[in-house]
Image: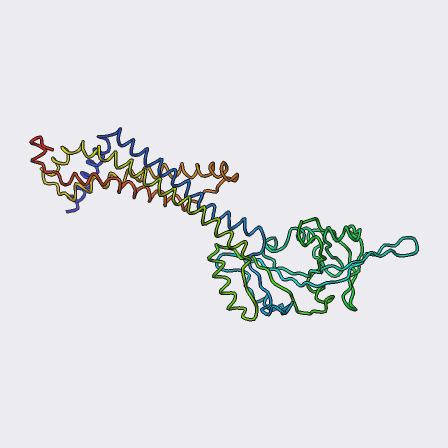
Length: 395
């Protein structure tokens, strides 16, 4: 029994090789069509997957995308305990977080000129802040990161002063200023921050404990900013989970980031998916046209198989296996070329080379095999052939 099964298998593959080698020209055309379709499919799918990863990373670089604020709109501060209760990571990765306390203070510069003092002063917004160790660049502005690199960390003896505010008070790095709030005051050494073009240019920055002491708000903060990784849907799920964890505060997304990311990716994904569908349909039509010609040429072969006792199901299996092999070879070679093509397309269209996402490779090969099998539909007509009619010269 085992010998008979081995013999059948050997005969099956011998006939399969004969079928593939009998029409080399048309087999080459089919392989060319499948390979080209697989290459374009792999390239577009890779761009689609890469766009998702890049958009997520690029939007995270814009800063925080989740805001935790007091639930009561009339309150300007809340207890800082929620900061410690926010997990440092979620299902999509590490969560960057920073807490801030804002208040208005008097800032005055002190310069000794001869025996007297010339004092320039103004009112400005004081921002006290603290952040987690995980990826602070995602929740802090570049000017604060630059200040921390100069004097790490900012504290009660070192403060960061925005570029415009420093210009008003004629301050330079290492100058001394005095900060006053009610009857409390602190003197600190200035680090002039580079211009950001935002509100930071008119603010003063201290580490949170020093700001809480100066503003007489121990253990209080104004808000928490988070940068949660993941897709828009994952971020929405994270927000729902966070709202349950922190019932006494208001948790909401910074919508211009989360909604903008979703809209841009949805449009890119829709265009690329539609293009892939069109390419696969055109590839299937090319394969179907070539298979129709092959079916016309193989009538005598099929008639002979059926005349010597070959079952229609077995005859059909030969041709399905042939289509599967052609689809696999065309997909295997074409998808590899497509990944390389996507790198070039990314650089030419978006200005950044796309990263090969290898999950695309088996998907592209599988789609090519499926198209090859569906394109072989005309070969089903061969199983309906009646040997007697063919051998009499009929159609």
